Image 1 (tube, rainbow over the protein chains, first blue to last red):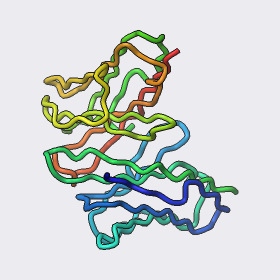
Image 2: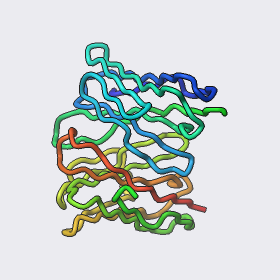
Image 3: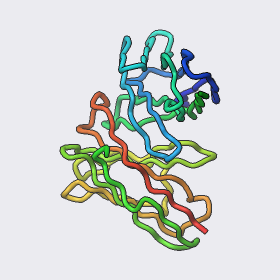
Length: 111
Length: 114
């Protein structure tokens, strides 16, 4: 079974702290995605990775293909970062690249 | 605005009824994916259409069906609704078939079955 595991499930941080969310998957993938879902419900794509590292503002995403593991880091966290962060992967083959999702990490950043 | 439009945003209906959810993909995107997000199951893939053709099916019930029209908008039809169908339904669009183009999500339709 293709599974995506995230940790931690819940995370509370003080404003300014460095945050790490982890994601591991069980089989080879074509790409890994980090998504953000705010309480209002909408989903925003943050990163798509197939190797290495990407940075956007205070967010950094890394992936280790050999270890089947990815991390999402948030530097200098802010209350507006409070959201659910979801790791998702795509598997190649059969002409469709639907996302398989982890259960999400609920982040609360306290002022 | 992500460029992907989903309507309606909220829908309340009774058990046994039928509803249609609509998704207009971002301009230029040929792929539309439908996902269901429920409290107990999380986000799950339902169905994928590319340029009018069904490409893959996931955990989609037989009571559910979908299609993609020539103008590339897609509709998800849910019939004989049950309480357990209450969920957020998202569509996401992508330029092509391959997974290296990224996805843009709509804001979702919140369906409540009473």
